[in-house]
Length: 494
Image (cartoon, rainbow, N blue to C red; front, top):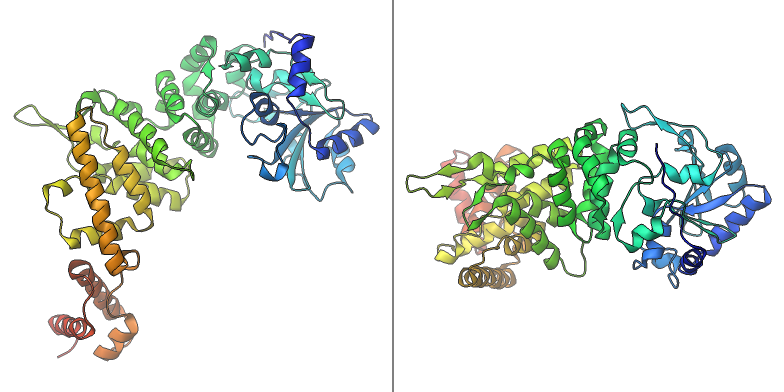
């Protein structure tokens, strides 16, 4: 690998060091290693984030570790894992060795999670992403094997010396993602780094160096060597980043999306019936941006952002051109929900996450038609009941989906949806829609019909719930009369 050294000046080095505040725990640990004759350096994202002055960065001045955005510290050391474990014994509150095969020992001290990795000068088999671990002898070689120069900076403890052999500080200032060595060599060693470039573009709002971008274009297919779980984790971090659209564009423009999320690039040039002036791909990115803006103080909301990303993926499969030349996408929400479940399952998302996102995709189009005045209170109840705990997210997704440039149309859609929300609030106050249940529970059904537990009780319960959704709360005598009528029709009673 060709390595280009671009070390900062002494003045820059001192200025950088002043931006980093080391927690006492790190200096204590550094002192233990120094007494034993070993080097110890803080490395990785905590150093980068402190220099960027990111809010809540653990190594930033004035940040209490208890309030830090991430409570993890990564270290690199000249000590071998067995020596590290010995030095932690009696000092750490807990240790773990799950990463010892890769030279990493984990520990916890005063609420901080710590990972200490022996200097590495590893090679990869370039078939999987598993490294062939070979311990290094110096920090510079260890930093050379890291993904980007902005992550290849280090800070010694307890000496507080800033080390930056590959120009990470300059690239931080220029908001540029560059590899310490040749991009092709870096990505051949570990193709996941290409996806990390998109993730950092979203998280940090950094640009990707042209040479790095070109290497990704040429090597995108190599991402197929990476496990679905690792890809899932990077995609999740990308989507909850400060600017997910920047990361998504990089995925599509470089061909990475074709490897694990082909539904996204497939949206290009599929004309959207709500906005004839742009394709569904651009519409989708706008919806993602809109969703980010609507999250509020509790964001980022991965479920909402993923639903915004996937909400129209059923359109290419349902596109139809009518006799008048008009374009339609009938039932694309149903098809899209099925495609969403398939794709998220392939990426190893949890069942609960898949269910929530696919339900939002399935429900996102139901609102259209409300403005025609056709919705009864029953339809509103079903809307709320089907959305259940996802209703606040569904409100945001539907509002985000309005991307028309026609101001009058946009204002009309916003007005209609506000009317629906107001109507939901009114019925909610009257009927407690969040807890819609039949007017008679299972015990009452069995007692009135004099039947034992079994399928008939469940069928009666389901019938009464449908009746409750259709007509609202019923007086007890009316609910009982409806139950008896249904039971006679079903032959359950004479």
